[in-house]
Length: 373
Image (cartoon, rainbow, N blue to C red; front, side, top):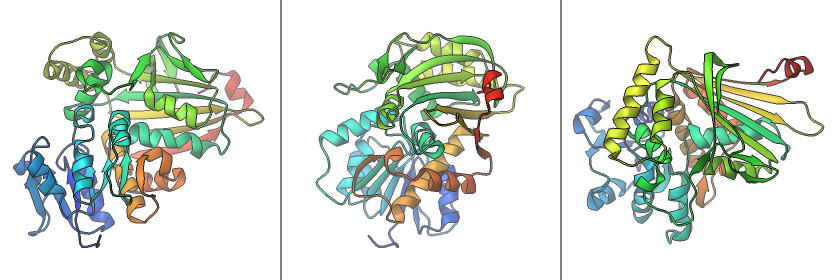
């Protein structure tokens, strides 16, 4: 499709979308088509008189098709992803547009995989955000070797709202999301041990000090479907993933919501309120720390620290889109971490978002004995 065709961004005025719009203007990828529910919010993003701005509801099939029609690529920043699923992807494919989703994740992938669009040249990149997209690229950036043990610590303190809060609730209450046959969302307390999922293998830890996480933290182990997919692809014998909380209220709220029922809107408000209370008096941050232990290799550690996980998600999505536009992504349905270059993606993220810092480090024996991450 010609470069003069627009890039469509759905959820353009949202917490992730407005970053995507700003950075795509800087990347000069061509004209943009901005879509979302509220036209007034979209108008605030207008820079040029001929900017293509369209208000629409994702559940309106006709409006969604009209938005996708004529686009080179549609980038979906709208959610919650566990309810949007493959709806936008199929609309984009039907109109001949490639697709990038900051979420998408396993449920959308399962639906698309089982009933792929007919166009053999169509490209779709799912999970093109911070989690799991960027996170699942880091182990390959740390080590060319597969196998060994990976431990990940991820979390922080920042405001969570809108679609992000809804997806967080739905990940804890998969019965409220659209059922996908055979899809497993994740399990608290589980880990990947000796090459397979092990339930109730890890316990929560309280009052822990961790490098890159200020103050005292709590760690809750959680093995997600995406972490399990990473373990199988990289052939890890062990993978242990800990969600880290610098605040108490959000952690308590999420524990209380796990497996419960009730109105999604009320649960989302509870999450939003808890995150706002936790961030009072603190500087917002999000960190991910990765430690790889492999035979005949020194222990390696990587850390990603950002002032906004939403901005980091947006930067990852722009990096994925640019890789697609450069012709680096083959036709087909992909998870972002299966097809993106770890080095190029991390470089792009740092270039786009100065509020993110990325480092890697070989741990000395002394540091290991002192219990450093």
